[in-house]
Amino acid sequence: MFWALQIMGWLGYAFVQYIGSLIQEMRSIYVLIILLGAYGGFLITIPMRYFYRKIWNAPPLLLIIVVLACSYVAAAIWAVIDNATHWEIYKFGYRPYNWLFYLKHSVVKFYIMMSWSGLYFVIKYYQLLQDEKQKALQAVSMAHQSQLKMLRYQLNPHFLFNTLNAISTLILVNENKTANGMVSKLSEFLRFSLDNDPIKRISLAREIDAMMLYLDIEKLRFAERLHVTIDITPEAERALVPSMILQPLIENSIKYAVAKLEDQGIIEVHGRVHKQRLYLEVRDNGPAAYSPETVRQNERGVGLKNTEERLRALYGKHYSFNLSSNNPTGCVVEIVIPWQLAE
Image (tube, rainbow, N blue to C red; front, side, top):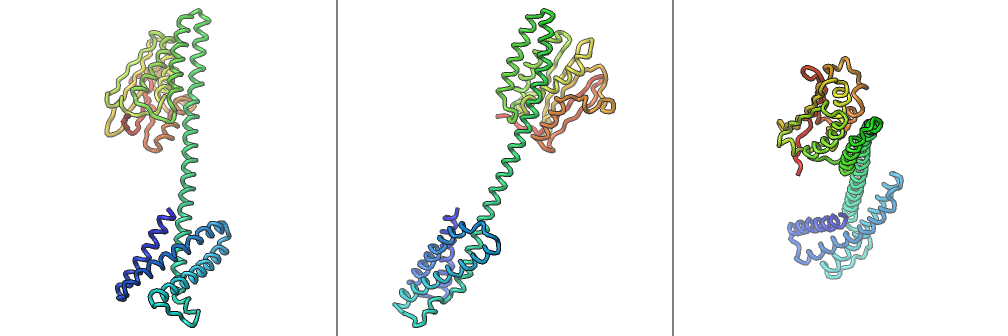
């Protein structure tokens, strides 16, 4: 970037000088004087760049003094070179008797060098600011990803605890075949969980497949007491959703609804798209109607809390997570997120 700006800047300086020479009706040889003057300025400012790098971390007052002195010395050298070239080529070897004439126009060149120095520091500080901003964004992104992974991985021990307890119970009552089937389903479910990064999003169709692996495990526990219906529109099946977003909702319904019912427990999963938003619902027919007044916050379980935290981390303010009463009894969990199509 430095070299591109250096070349373009001094070519621009030469162009402005050339326009001025047209107004003054100079001879065509003056074009060579202009190019040599611009080339001289180009060469003189290169050491200034490396010198400024050396004093970059100096105190501000000292930095200003050094920049002023450096710009003045560079301007004086440039003026001597420029004037010598001008007199040698344009005035056919004219030599002024007073050497101070070699410093003619050095004040103008001092302002040019100061402008060059100012632009150098402004661009350099801007680059450093952008680098710091990029580092800050990367740090925030890493913290964000760590938070999402932590929330997701908190679900696995909770789920494993319940499943292993169920397997242990089946073994104790000599239901070895059922226990073996549950272990097989559990291994498939864990394989799916490990193969899908909690940071990435997957299609709702794949998420439903993962949910069915989990439900196959639970159906071995509850047999005919658990009935599941799925109503997902084709448009919604292609939507991107956070991986393993439905499993904690289903687990919550089983724990607080199906497990407490003597009759058949029903879980309904609905998915539809409306006005560029994906609506997901998980309904159950629990023994009592859900009421936020009667259910304490800590009774919602780790799964629902972590689900809401994951949605907040992924979508910011562009999501909705609501619990309401089902008709006539039970609970409805509704998630509304932006509709994004999976490739």
